[in-house]
Each structure stands twice: as structure tokens, then as C-alpha cells.
Amino acid sequence: MQGYPEGVTALVTGGASGIGAASAKLLTERGVRVVTADLAEGADEQLDVSDPTAVDALRTRLGRVDILINSAGIVGPSAPLVDVDVDLAAWRRTFRINVEGTFLMCRAFVPGMVASGWGRVVNLASIAAKDGNPNQSAYSASKAAVVALTKSLGKEVATAGVLVNAIAPAAVESPMNAGTDPAILARSQSLTPMARMGRADEIAELISWLSSSAVSYSTGAVYDASGGRATY
Image (cartoon, rainbow, N blue to C red; front, top):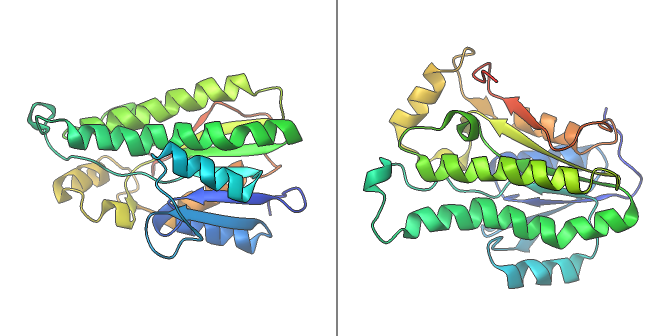
């Protein structure tokens, strides 16, 4: 079992369902106090991660957290890049939630971790950040930005006792993928040597480990959870 400092608090965005909910459940079972944040009902805190005022208000309410899991995200438009809507609304919304949301949460809560001398940040990227999924340019590009953000922040706080890592899953059975084009999901599965989609609880196990004291010499890294799909 992974170890955590006594009395730590974890904040999980996207915590009402999917990977976020599975992570919150597992961390709770392992003795961590968990606060979930989501726009959907069922979360401890109602939060739009792309709203800087709302994020700052949540920080004021919660104070310091020790573990931050940025799981909130959307798939965005599933269409050829040249067919993405001309007003760019869907493209921009994908980046606001996936990238700006991660940035705002880190900006709000990492300083408290640095001040205390211990913290863990786990950002949810995607195998699409490495491969680039056809007909998912917004999603792929936004998750690549999450990877770069993770690497930058990990270096910035590398001597502060705060570790910042990312996970790059292949397609996972979760509500986020409920509206994804079945052809895109089928392509993902066809590229996966294990020949199946991942499960939220499998990703949660990796998140739990990266959130623990068992990890002490890894930061700014990207961990694949792709059923063998990753090639680098």
C-alpha cells in the first residue's frame, strides 16, 4: 500500500465520475481526506475549472491541499481539423477546460504545497498527446499542452518537495467518452495490444501511486497507461 503523510488532503477535479471518481474512492480507502470538485452533481464542490474567480474562491474555502489531481476534461469536437466550427467555440472550450483549467488549479494550489514542503500534482493527459488522434485535433493538442505544462512546472518546483507528473491513458471506459465518435474509440482499441479499453479503476491505481510518498525521485514525467499502445 502506498504511504501518505498523516492528515493529507487531496483535491480531485472531475471527481463526480470516471477517472476522477475512481481516484477519489481509492484515495479515501487508503486514508486520504478527499474533496471532489466538478460541475456535475454529486461532487463536494461545484466548480468550473476554467473560471479563475471560482478557482480562487475554492482555494479560499479549502486552504492548502496536499494532493491535486487534475482530472476534469472534455473530448471536444470530433471532426477533421478543417471542419472544426468556423467560430472556434468548440476548439476554445476544449483548451479552456483541459489546459486553462489545469493551469488555474496548479496556480491556485501549488504555492501552498511549496510552503509546506510536500505536495503531489497529477495531471491527466492522454495518449493522444503523443500520437495525435485523427479527427480530434483540439483534444490531442490540448492534452499535449498539459504534458508540456507538467514538465515545466515539475522543473520549477523540483527542489520544493512537490512532485508534478502526468498520466497518458489510452481510451478509457468513462462518461467522458460517452459522446465520442464510436469510430475513434474503435481505432484506439485496434491500436492497443491488449485489445480493450482501459478502466477508470486501473488509472486510479497509477494516480494513487503518483500521489503518494512512495514516489520521491520522479517529477515532470509522463506515465503511459495505454494497454501497450504507447511507442515512446
